[in-house]
Amino acid sequence: MIPIVMAISTETYSIEPVELSTADDDLVREVAALHNAIAAERVPEDPPLSFEAFASRVRNRPAMVVIRDWLARSAEGELVGRGLVVRFEADTNQHLRDAGIDVLPAHRRKGIGRQLLREVVAGAGDADDIVLSFFTNDRVPAAAAFLERIGAKTALTMHTNHLDLAALDRAMVSEWAAIRTKGYRLEWIDGDVPEDRMQNVIIAYDTMNTAPRGDSAMQDWNTTPEQIREFDRSRRARGFERRLVLALDEATGETAGYTELVYDPKIPHLIWQQGTAVIPSHRGHGLGKWLKAAMVERALRDWPNARLIRTGNADSNAPMLAINTRLGFKPAWAESIWEVGIADARRYTAEGSLT
Image (cartoon, rainbow, N blue to C red; front, top):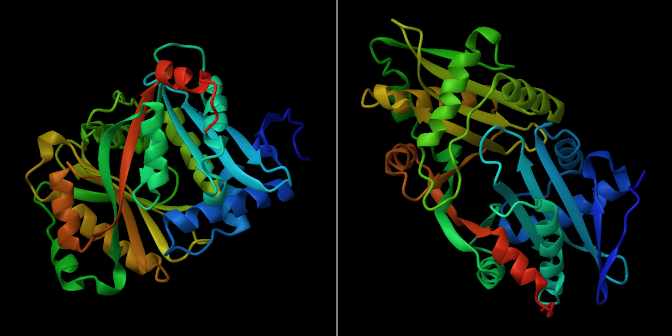
């Protein structure tokens, strides 16, 4: 059943809130089509996302990831834009909100972005320390221009990098996978994280706090067992497959590093690299190369239809970029994280003009 909505007029357009997790197939198909139209501008080399793939994502979000969505329609009823704001229920970063605003090119500069932002700002909460965080892709310059107008600043510059598996230097990968650093061993987790490895995985994930953040207002995250269990539940419900490998200190059993890949069989050409990290006290032993190479070899065996591994890297993360570059990752597009304080965002949306 399509949710009951209250539409807010912006000249010939209307904005309506929507709960996608419970929306019926017809509405989800509309939003999937909008998603694909926007994605064709950002990532034209990717095929459209199927309805099944899109629906499995919006209907199986992790419980602690609280998302509010709004849709923009033309006077003719065409879906032309979407806004969203994301709050992560955790004990840190309660001031931070991920946000997104997408408008089809033919409907830009008509006030839709501002009206969607108005809803995002109102939906972000009442606190005065809230920070909205947006991602942009250099293939869509209109996004950066809009964020500059609202007073957002670039917090971190990044690139999405691709590894073409057909061009992979498999001899080098085999050499790296054979490093087997003395005093360490690898342990694989393919399904849910088992209870006896929960603390090891928490330490691994929290090591991502050492990754570059630029000028972001983001604070350290503190992963909990409950969050990991919920992410595992959501991953299974979406039909994603996961490979996670830990490097463990053989003498103590402590986590020394990890890397993780995720694969959606509904998108067979693409593997997504999740986090990779080596605990600072264990760096300098080649663990990063060993972990990455062992994982690539596993991916080749388990997901033979995949053509690409895709990852995001901060431009300032020299150690990880060095490993990825030697593996064969190449820049695909540039990205930026932009942030704006809620006071500036409220001030912009309160202005009279909707241009």
